[in-house]
Image (cartoon, rainbow, N blue to C red; front, top):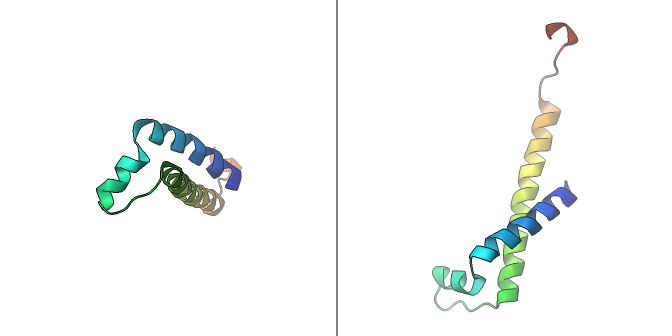
Length: 74
């Protein structure tokens, strides 16, 4: 799950920051907040990584707890 969420976060970060500038986004939350582009990229990557790790964990949990199908009911 960790590698899947890592790779998904990397792709998500590339797509998101191809459209949005992290320095411009920092001004939305607080005008006095000055962060560098590298810090914005890092924060965005870790946000996407945590988000996709949670989604992967929930998916794995749902698959493991799903009711089993009987061979007779097919």
